[in-house]
Amino acid sequence: MDRFTERDQLIRKWIYAAAATIKESFDDELDIERKSNRNDLVTNMDKAIEKQFIEKIQHFFPGERILGEEGLGDEISLLDGVVWIIDPIDGTLNFVKQQDDFAIMIAIYEDGKGQLGYIYDVMQDKLYSARTGKGAYCNKRLLPTIEDRPLKEGLVAISSALMSKEEGLARTVGRASSGVRLIGSAGIETAHVASGRLIGYLAATLAPWDIAAGKIIAEEVGLIYTKLNGDKVDLLQKTPVLVASPTAHKEIIELLKSQKI
Image (cartoon, rainbow, N blue to C red; front, top):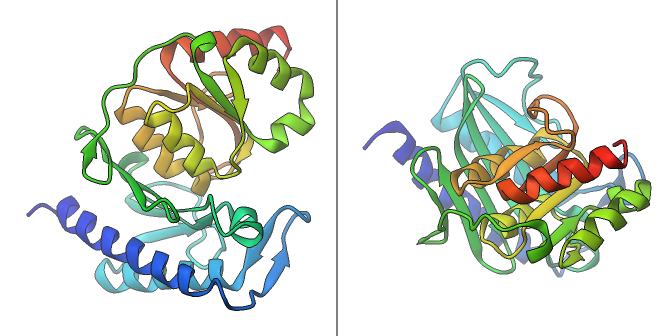
């Protein structure tokens, strides 16, 4: 058993255990705090799950660094060595308001290169996973290489922040596609592009923990994952993101250029 196989087995157990803890909390009253604004929330459950993951990583893999959304891990300025990137609940607003459409995300990078990525759609019981060079899966089903369709033949997801800040951009891309969908979880939206349900996903600002797992999964099925302007994503910065099939990605970049974005 190589070291990544061992990690894969542990991570899957940890994710399912965390999901069970989250579901058990549904009847409890949450402690909810605002972060940057009224739509950017954190709950006691986000913090508890992140703490759970960190304790397990530190026990099994002491000395490896951890970047977590809730700040309970390490201060990281370089991706040297092995770095775990964790989002305990992606789509916290959905978790609070709907108890649906939220995900658990874990990724491992080594010297800046993605190695393992996991997005667990908790309420749909769908675990999207990938190991670089070994393909991507939904549960135990291998995801095929994405069909390279043009933008007009697929649905796109556009984040609510991008739609509100750049209404003209959203309309331009939306009109060029078959239609626009919005879920409110970067992980689930990226997973839907990777599984072929969507042709692309655009977001105004994603943090490293929103990006890390999905980027590994997306690239394993042949998707292009970049900044909105086509530049390479910096995993230590918040950044606008575009993930799409190669043809749709090229078309969307051209549309964005026409909008001077």
